Each structure stands twice: as C-alpha cells, then as structure tokens.
Image 1 (cartoon, rainbow, N blue to C red):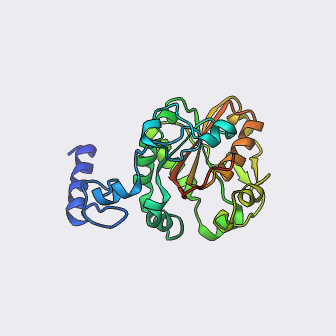
Image 2: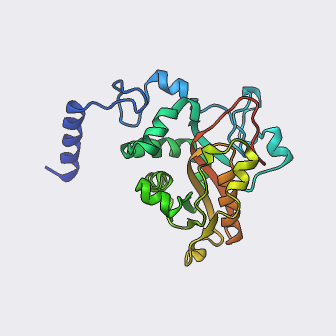
Length: 251
C-alpha cells in the first residue's frame, strides 16, 4: 500500500473513532474545519465589510472597493484588512484557542483565514504575525498569531517570517483598555523589526496576521514599523473582528 493510500485509510479510521466536531459547539460535522450551520450563521462569515478596516457595512454598500466613512476620512496605515468572522460570534472558540491551549484549532482557523483573506494573499509575498512580548510568550508558551501565520503559509504557499517583528515593551493587555485612544497610546512604539530581518521585509508586499482585531491600534502600530523598515505594502488579516454598536475604528 502506498503512503498516500495508507494516510487515507488512517484518516477514515480516525474519523470513525473520533468524528469531526464543530469547533464552536461540538456537534458532529463533515470536516474538522467546518462549523455547524447554526454556528456558521452566528459567526458572521462572509458579510460585507469595509475594505480598509474590516468593519461590517450595509449590504447595499458591499463590494471590493467599499470603505466606511471613518476610513475615507482618515485611512489606516495598512492598505486593506479582512477578518474571517465577528469576534462576538466566535468568542468562545477564540478564547479557547488563545488561553485554553486549544492549538488543535489551528488547521481550521488557518483554512478560514485563507478563505477570508484570498484577495490579500493573491499579491502577498510574506506573512508576518503580530508578536507577543517575551514575558507573555514565556507564560503562554506559544504565540497564537504565529500559529495562524504558519498554518496559513502551509495552505497558501506564501512564506512566513514568524520573528520579523519583536515587541519591545511589555504593554498591558489591549482588552484592558477602555478607549480607542488608550489602545493607540498603549502600543505606541511597542514594535521593532528584529535585527537581521530588515532585508527580508524590504520591498515586500506583506500580510500582517493577528487573532483578534478590535480598533486596529495594534495592527496600525505594527504596520508603521514594517513600513519604516521598507515594506512595499502591508495588509491586515485577522481571525476575528470585534464589532461594537456605534464604535468606529481609531484612524
């Protein structure tokens, strides 16, 4: 039996013993990367969004060029942004992945990023994850954004440079920041290009990867760092986008 055939047999046996489950609610599904219909609808996959900041838009405004009023008035540093789902619809999955060590979600999440980020990945030359500060990385033992970026690289073929950026300050968690202004101030000058990585960044079209995009402050700060190092273009791709009623992005 060939190696490929053996792998398929193992897959069939594994599915029979441990049927694929929805990562959100646990009901059986046809694929390890598939949500059940109820969770899919609640997660907000594929809804129209601003091309610059990924905030949802009214359906009649939806196309690949549509931008929200805030981004038209003050465009962000990254040229485009995409998110696979609403944070509010996938919160439990994201938190289990991020804080509950459910790294087995990585293949499913990477597949969703590939689907949501297809327009960005078509021109991308490099994937760069948002870094954790070394003390937080030591406590958590993994950088969830790096896991996503590496998984997406394997699916898309776009090279990943997981240590291109370093976090120079141990900033408080962005989730603890009440306002967009505080979030922006919290990550001001918090990133730097790793010594030796500048050449790999220069003149590249980069997709910056993060797990959650809230106001965009973290991605904005990281983008500016990459551009100062000579990146030709930077887009942002997040697993989940926080959507709060009446809240505009920081830009």
